[in-house]
Length: 104
Length: 378
Image (tube, rainbow over all chains, first blue to last red; front, side, top):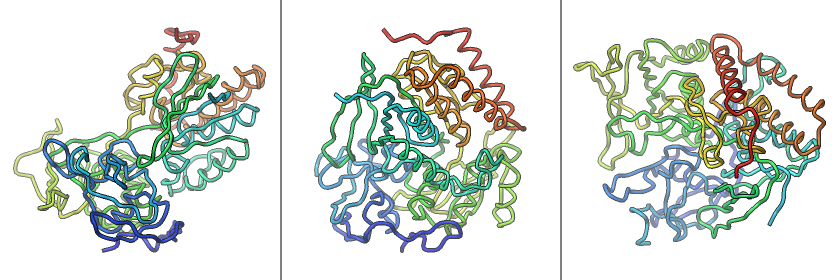
């Protein structure tokens, strides 16, 4: 299921960045270099970014502009990366974050 | 240590306009923004603006954004992206954290003679059972996803709130190929402009007045798969027995915005509470200077309005900073500000705008009576 917009009455939705692959929880997904990691995840249907520390509840996109931290994930071994304001690079390894992401 | 004449925080319409004016006057300007790209929320506003030709009527927000950005770069403005201001220190030193989250971040200290805070606004939340589940998001977040990143956050959406953001984003979600199942509004009438509401109605989307969302329905993974709504009484309490479930995978919340005040508070600027502008706002003069000398504010940080007023306030802040640096004469700066205030009055007009004009006057008067002259922080 691809959630990318291909045709739009106002916008030109031709991807700007080069098509690359990122690895999300071991699975390869298509992404475009420079787009927010979160966009590539939502395009591929991944809605859960992390599970909370105490109640282990899922969280996903909430504010989309780097303020709420609900979309934090572990990226290339670094926990607490806000995926809505972090651009895709080819071959990035993304993991759903559990709690504070200490058990990388 | 880096030295700049002016450091501006926030590269939205207010920050960009301030940077352009200060830059044109000859100041060295550093514009800092935490996002991956400049423009603030302008690039997601793909609808055409209202108003006079002096205020870009008929032009889309994203086009205005590109023009402003070009003008700023042409004025010699330096822009640092993925950079977050984390502190103000004695001697006008500014702590800035640079770099994306997954990289080794650097803390850089910049000394600036003048600081302009234009950090914009934050979406309000409405809490209901399940509101933290993946699939519940701010209407602005959904708008960013579709219009900037060209990705649909979901397929079937329920929108909460019928202000202009709720109405416009509902329409834009449909333009992006999403289905909008319903627009839910607790008040007895639609909050935004009739022209926007008509577009939604024509598309066949029900606007459910005197209704609210009671709970998000979750699938086994804990993500949204539906939405329970109910009618509300005159005190906005759900009426028992009126509950129904709408099938959807996304719930967007358009419950207004509040000024993003973190840096204003950090800088120690005097505040006032103003419901018309969305909450606490900094007291400021007609020069857009706060109670702290050399610290200016502009845009939604001074009270939630829209892109054009943000732009005009930004210009004033940039001009005033340049004036205090001796780059513009008081006469020149005064004349420029006078013209801008006239344009601001034309924007703060009509049934929605006049209240903002009255409230803005109240803030300016409170500054005069309570502050008078901005003071350096000891």
